[in-house]
Amino acid sequence: MAVRIRLGNYEQTTTDVLQRTAIGYFPRMTEEEAMEAGRGVWRLDMRIISRERFVLIVGEGLVRAVGEITAVTEHLTDRGLKKALETDLLGPGHPLYDTYINQPDPLANESRNSIRYGDLPEEAAFRTRDCACGCGETTTHPFVPGHELRAIMARVREHFGGSALDFITWLDTELPPAAPAA
Ligand SMILES: [Zn+2]
Image (cartoon, rainbow, N blue to C red; front, top):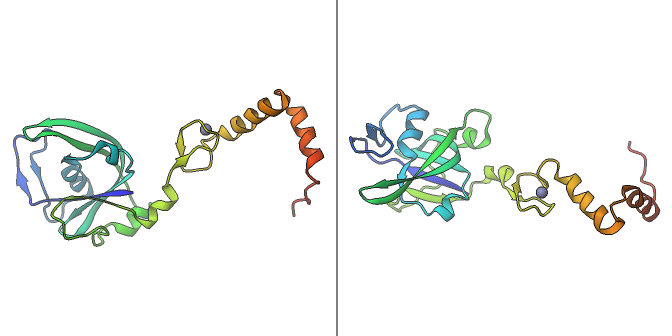
């Protein structure tokens, strides 16, 4: 999923916990400025936000910045504990950027809430899953790099007493020779 953050009206501030001098949307803001204005501070559920990978910053109905979330930080404000996102700005060539930058908010709704979570089709290629070796790490591929071998060797240990030769001999006996690669 991604999180959409809608910028409010521009206002100057002297009390911001992120040391910004202003927050909110203003015309012709750069993508860096849009991300800085939108990345915090918000009341966010850590269990939900920690699963998000991408953030869209929306100002006046259009996407003004697209980022990949690298960390979530906590800040004590006069309205309680709030959170901010650390992000890497995405740019041309990234499918989420190419699809949404300067386009209408894909997660627009009637709610006054600035925060909305939702699935975007372009995220599919980045969706993580559990590594198939069972290590508990997550990856965008079937295995974390190198863990294919770990998974194979675990089976060699379990079924062949650790002997790769026994495993290969067994495999060659069980399976007919494969057709030569074209
Ligand atoms: Zn693994």
